[in-house]
Figure (cartoon, rainbow, N blue to C red):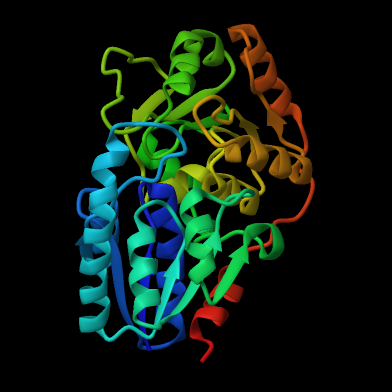
Length: 329
């Protein structure tokens, strides 16, 4: 079967597709193609796993007024025609999309070619690209109905390998801090301004985001990285508590690993999906959530409370179900 995968704009859309790619390879000798944006993070991530990548023009879909909307109104039709050519030349049988503005031209092109289109919504509320694409889809799979996608590889980490990689010891608990593929200024500030207090009890692995390292911060028990890929599973394995934004992909991985968590969802400037993700996962897993306006002391108190909490609930991995649907003829 010739299968096209799409989705992007952030790494959070690409990682679930990589999980699907791994499972498809386990199921048979399928021909795979990833169609993403010309300038997005998808190309490097997908080529790293050995899948052919084709880039097309994409226009960001915004819910607010911006002059960039005018430019993007011209980029999207061009992207649709580019994607149509790519899909036709590849001889695609099915298109699988996890959303993000990158996916919309590909879904439109697939509809023009009469291809089977499968959408999966990662978040608890549907994003704009998937809302627009859903009218053309053969099947729409919601995480609220079938669960979230988690890479099987992330469940196979080694705490010893994590300690060797980070240089941290096994005598104090480790907090993993991550703010999504782009990093989170609020989370980075909270950690750096309260680092001395945090290090009294914990060690910290801080994933800051690209271009957001602070090379002036050098303290025993604290390590920082722009981004972690293959090493993330080992860091997860050595971690007692995860401080994270409310992206569905990150929350799903933390839940699957049964880790304690403090979730600080994005507030203003988002459609509210992270807050809803946080509410649902926290209710299911017994996690702590910190939102709205809060002080540094509120943050430290919430972190201590989260670390003292207990994990409850069970996580459902939808990867197998989704690949069943993709391969259905």
